[in-house]
Amino acid sequence: MTTDTPNTAPPALVPGEDAVFLDFDGTLVEIAPRPDAVHVPDGLAEVLMDLHALCGGALALVSGRAMGELAAFLPRFTGPLIGSHGAESRGLDLPGAGHAVDLAALHARFVEFANANDLLAEAKPHGAAIHFRSRPEAEALARAFAEEMIALHPGLTLQPAKMAFELRPAGATKDAALRQLADAVPFAGRRPVYLGDDTTDEPALIWAQERGGMGVKVGEGASAARWRLSGPQAVRAWLTAATET
Ligand SMILES: O=P(O)(O)OC[C@H]1O[C@H](O[C@H]2O[C@H](CO)[C@@H](O)[C@H](O)[C@H]2O)[C@H](O)[C@@H](O)[C@@H]1O
Image (tube, protein in one colour):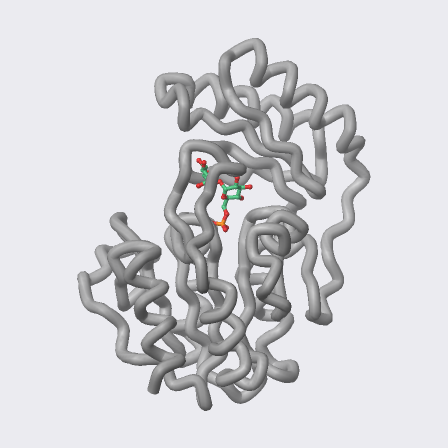
């Protein structure tokens, strides 16, 4: 259930006991006008690598982004990645998602619609997204298009995002991926700590708390998380502090 999260900063991480799961956009890095315009601050990969080591390898990035993009944004982070909402991963024993969608045709249709309506199409390895951040008034138009595409592509489902509508494989969710990993090395026996900013993160925030861990909502908005950090800068400072103790 989504509730109003108190504006209470989480207590310090305990790297010897915690398993840390971090969303990317809006959590580790600030939201940008376009998906390819995010700024990754100097030193972020190094902090993540330090914390990954302190946590005995139990730190993973968990994103709706394509895994290859995550890797490209953070080339010096070599730890586990979960991309495309759980449909793909690196360094983890996850099955990935299967579907029978003609992605080339889907991507072409998204580009055609975006060009005709001054929107932005994002081709993803397991789906696609239509972004309306540059034209907020086009939200209903973008949603109608995404719903039309869903109806034509069984196996994909609608994933509302920040100023965007995505199509992702049904069943590929962040919390489903984490449920499959939680009892395996190096995460087993550790307290899950999940940080996220978006609706796609809510089930994972709830999952972490149900397992006796911490859910940390990043930024404004209602959430089921018990803890909150004000934005990516506060997240980075909180993570950095955990590497300095
Ligand atoms: O799960 P996340 O790591 O939070 O990724 C969610 C989606 O993030 C990206 O879109 C969002 O961020 C963009 C850059 O800040 C922004 O321009 C856009 O409006 C946001 O929706 C990404 O493009 C998607 O593929 C991710 O699923």
